[in-house]
Structure formats: structure tokens, C-alpha cells
View 1 (cartoon, rainbow, N blue to C red):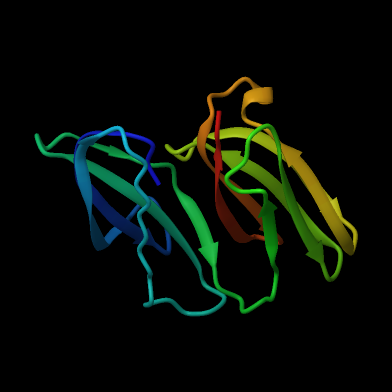
View 2 (spheres, rainbow, N blue to C red; view 1 turned 180 degrees about the horizontal axis):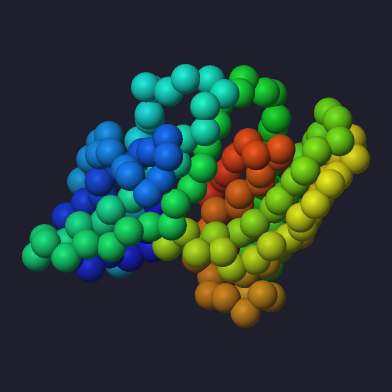
Length: 166
């Protein structure tokens, strides 16, 4: 998801089993120059359960200049982990909730549209149970707009996009 774009031709989606070597697995067209919100998606259907895959985006401008996103890791395990973010979009604060079926190593982060971490809401071993975290970009000193909540449970990454309104 982007909040604005300048000269954006598009995104090359790259994957690796062992960084730093990446392979191009797809392309998504950009929207040139715009100040509108755009949501992008790409499904990687060529994966094997329980393998860890590393992904990055190569954003390419119409003039050939490019920039890489941060690398993110993902693994499909078939677990039934579910998190919710309500309200979304939100003004003021939103609530991030999830349940753990057993003790787990958990990290809860919020990323900006460039994939940069702007907040760590919690990190460490958590007991079985229900969890709730409040979040407000404004209260953390950041602009309203789009963010991604990333919850990592025992190495398995789950994410949701959120939008904070004025």
C-alpha cells in the first residue's frame, strides 16, 4: 500500500530461500505520480509449507532508478492464528487483538509504507491467552496515514494494513 507515488513504474517482487541472492518472481504496475492511496497485492503460489522464504520489493521509476524495500521473512505452516485490528480505519486509537493457543515467542511491530519499523508494541515469550494492544501513530509522533501491523509468532509472520485518519 502506498500513500503517494512519484514517477513509479512499478514493483518487482523478489524471493529467496537464502539471502542475499534473490530471484524475480513477479511484477506489479505502479501508478506513476499520484497522491492517492493505492493498495497492491501479489500471491506467491509456488511455496512449500514449513520453508522460510525471504521477500523484498524493487521499486522501479520510469527513469530507471530503483530502490529496495526491507527484507521480510514468511513461512506457511497451516496454523490457525488470527489477529484483528478494530477499528480500521481509525481516528485516535485502534486495538490490535489476538489469541495464543500455547506459549509462544511473540513480536508485535508497526511498519510505515516503506517497511520501516516505527514502533515495537511488545516482544518476548507470551503465555497462552488473549492479548490486546492499543496503537496510535499520532501519539507515537508519526503522521496519520497507512501502516502495517506485523505480529510474529514463533517465527511465523502475520500482518494487517491499518489506516489512521486525521
